[in-house]
Image (cartoon, rainbow, N blue to C red; front, side, top):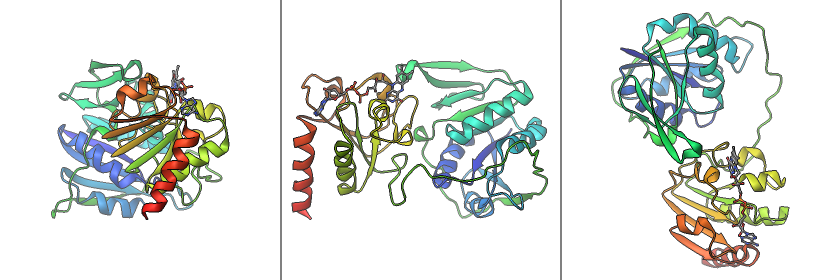
Length: 313
Ligand SMILES: Cc1cc2nc3c(=O)[nH]c(=O)nc-3n(C[C@H](O)[C@H](O)[C@H](O)COP(=O)(O)OP(=O)(O)OC[C@H]3O[C@@H](n4cnc5c(N)ncnc54)[C@H](O)[C@@H]3O)c2cc1C
């Protein structure tokens, strides 16, 4: 069986993410990776060395940085019958392209897969991660998006797979990206990939409170994140939201500041190795999740921690 992995060349996390999707795909058969858009040739060069990859395909359109998902989806749908499975990361890209292919082929995708049991059985979280559903699917091809934080990156090998250029990614002309507006400020670390994430929640009241969270994140060499409550209050951008409807992160250390521990938030931090929490309420549920819990007001605790960290450097 041959498995097709789709990769988005426009994202900074792509190489690591693709390596993780390849790990998920390797158990299903020989892996062909298709990446499209500006930078796809370079990305294909990295992918060629990943264990399990037999071919890396890349394609660009002369005047477009990013291939429109409808162009990519239509192209993949035409050759989909050659593959037993088609996979992408559970990311914005995966959420756009995989259902599109499913629509064109009349196949129901299985999304957010955390474990591949065999070629037809997949585990995916339901009820904000409170339970897992074992799903059996019978379609051909089987369409999946996989949670990359649940799969280790495929290692690089000395052997190199073959590269192939796709030259017929014809634009359908349905849409065109006019401008790219990064949601993270320049120089700001990305919580999706950071080793340390400090997130602020509903306990924050002002922008100054969130600035303290950002300062602690910087001092620890990490990235700032937020719960939905902080996003809803307008204290943090939606791109930093962690949880069921936000980012799923896997940092070494996660620090929750004024975050109560709702299951929808916990769904995004299940893969964090160590959790620390600061909350004014000594009985906050997050305290039960945390390896280290500081029952304190964030407005006194964060400045004190920052002073301590500054004194140590
Ligand atoms: C379908 C659905 C999807 C959702 N998706 C998400 C999601 O992706 N991510 C997400 O986060 N939420 C999500 N939610 C919302 C979720 O249910 C919670 O409402 C939200 O996570 C609460 O955020 P919070 O814990 O930061 O705020 P709160 O529940 O308001 O908790 C605030 C905490 O701060 C503490 N606190 C207050 N003042 C201070 C202080 N001065 N110092 C220290 N601590 C203080 C309080 O004791 C409390 O524990 C979703 C909800 C639904 C229904």
